[in-house]
Length: 72
Image (cartoon, rainbow, N blue to C red; front, side):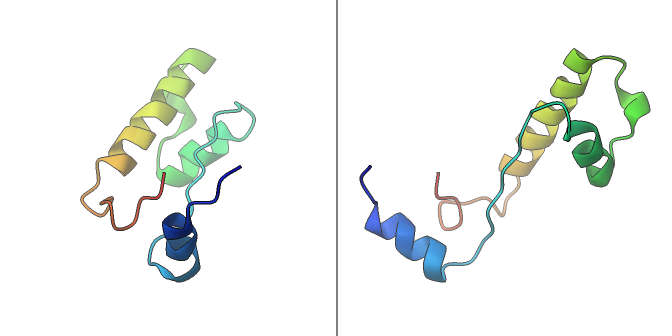
């Protein structure tokens, strides 16, 4: 594995946070609820995963997500 020194430096000293938006199904209902999406917003697993995807899209489209803070 090759280490990208610029990315490593950003992790050490840059601003931002680590985001892991998992889609296992087990923790997704709780993650959605914490984000403000109640369980009545979806009626099955496929719709729940659609909600997870919509949440991801809103996050990555936010103006704060610029190249200065996103590593990969």
